[in-house]
Length: 294
Image (cartoon, rainbow, N blue to C red; front, side):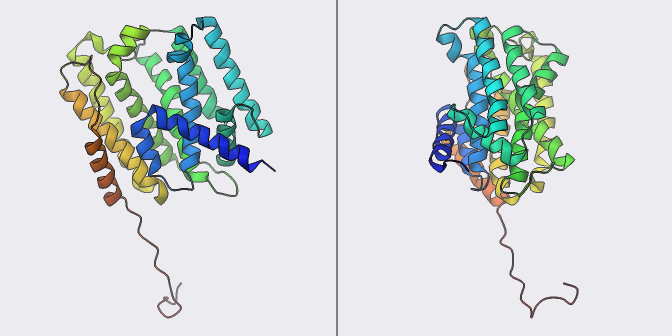
């Protein structure tokens, strides 16, 4: 038995993280059905906190590199412990643990994520192999965590998602990460000294990255209609927002200015997603209109 007030407070803490850090994901998450919405916010909150350890807040607080790793290790250990025991004194971890227990988010999803976060403390430049490894851990598994939520929230027992949906979740996560790498290139290189894509090598490399993003977005889009109905509009909105970012990045001449999608354009993208993936109410079947085979 759990304390409902504590659980609700933990969920509210997780929700405050996504509101503060991401207008785009915040918008998309608000379009999820109530069955899954809080769970996805719980996933995002843990991911965001871990990212802050290696990307900003810890450094700004004067935490040395070796201690940042200790803090990250402690967060990972507390995450596993909370999943095992069903409680954490860390509100964000508690919220995530409740989601992991209900939806079947396992160590095979969590360990690669923390592995990629450690990479940010150890490696500044990436080749194609290390880039792919990093993106799998930092983004693709986050997509897989969300897919576990989409498939299993509210179920009596978690099950493995369809392999087609697994591929779609991974490719959408990879696209999101590469788009963020492109739009944050100036900050990553200037403030953190990191190069994930090698786009500083010239326009040809940038075109290559954009073509890969296009392929990932196209592959992911084909799987959205296969998602549970209460997830489709939100995922389609997130896909549309990042597709719009891709087009703006393609046209941008100055990558030192962070590309953004204006609020009215975001609203239009969400409206189109709602029309394209609106839920169709199930018809009630009466005894009179049933076919003999039913």
